[in-house]
Length: 313
Ligand SMILES: NC(=O)c1ccc[n+]([C@@H]2O[C@H](COP(=O)([O-])OP(=O)(O)OC[C@H]3O[C@@H](n4cnc5c(N)ncnc54)[C@H](OP(=O)(O)O)[C@@H]3O)[C@@H](O)[C@H]2O)c1
Image 1 (cartoon, protein in one colour):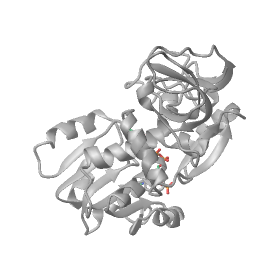
Image 2: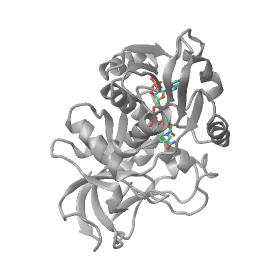
Image 3: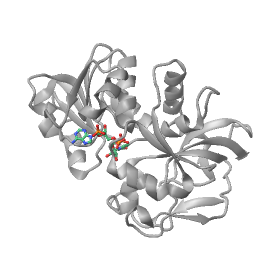
Image 4: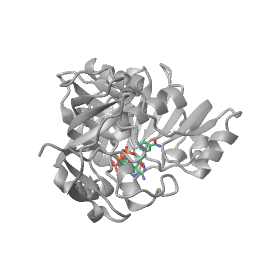
């Protein structure tokens, strides 16, 4: 099969298209013929070596945690049919999504409806799970809460705004002014341009501050947290872990989340989409052979929603 690999840390140019053996599914796994693979900033951060403290060693690697495609083969303990259209949040630590075939434990795979394109489905698993888990599990989101989403136009933030709105929250979105119309179209009642205003300096408070962009610390955000408010960050760091532990007994809590691959969350994301609460915005679909260009683009930023790789091209 064709696959994108990197054999050492480096810039986007270390990604190369090679021929690899097609993986074989274990008893509890399925083999997916990948139509589209989602790209996330973590793929680029792992490739650059920035996160080698989190995931050391082990080359060559096929990056990518998000895939959408068709079931090709089913392990004896996996409850799927050949030919089913699915999405998966790959549960292997190194990913494996930028390839024509990927294996995944059946508990991290869900069926997708005909109405959902492969590009949309590939954009959903990691970013959607991050948004859902951050808001509901870490942020204890409830109807009527005021929620600020920092990074509201991005992959995680654009889904978080819509989930919070669907759950009855009043949402403030923070992004650059270029993306104000997009963020408001997702249902945000208020918009803050981070280039003009630091939300942390405003005379306003929110029940939940979700820093989807990983740009604002708990310390900086604490003054704008309402009484019993919660701050949730997507930026994994030692300092974040310390904040999570030390603020546990406090009135205002800080949490750093690490997204997990869970079937019930993937099903919930598909449900939200089918019921019209979640629109998945795919900014670009780039051929698998141009994965380095896709990484350069994700590192540059400036687009709304998600970028995916078209694997069949
Ligand atoms: N912990 C986890 O498990 C986990 C999971 C997923 C993602 N993440 C991390 O979460 C972050 C966001 O991921 P993503 O996929 O949403 O990235 P993304 O699609 O690149 O989105 C980034 C967002 O941040 C905004 N932004 C850029 N500079 C900003 C600033 N100074 N202040 C406020 N907002 C700013 C961008 O707005 P403009 O485009 O308008 O500038 C955009 O809305 C990444 O660092 C990623 O590694 C962590």
